[in-house]
Image 1 (cartoon, rainbow, N blue to C red):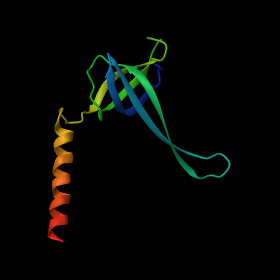
Image 2 (image 1 turned 30 degrees about the vertical axis):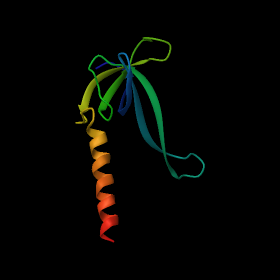
Image 3 (image 1 turned 90 degrees about the vertical axis):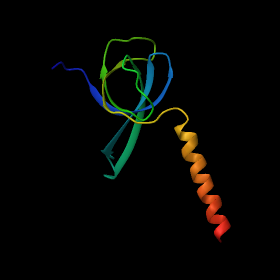
Image 4 (image 1 turned 120 degrees about the vertical axis):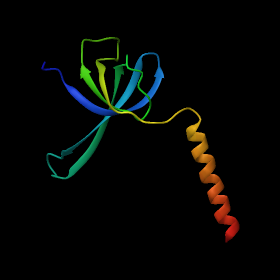
Length: 105
């Protein structure tokens, strides 16, 4: 195993060609106040595996691919099952349910 940094995060965007934006969340203790703080950071990663938004992935440090890309997607841990148009169908169903509840009252 090599010494490259491996981070686990969620794909936030895949609109670029062969590039995904991965959000890596971490929790740490504040040095002075000792409170547990949640922080997150977005990394651009080179994507040859065709990740979708919502996928949980492992990204690995690499030599610079471009000006902002310093990571490569190594593997997909958990794939988000969602096709195009599914999100609109979910929102339409919830709007219909809310309208039906309003009519009953």
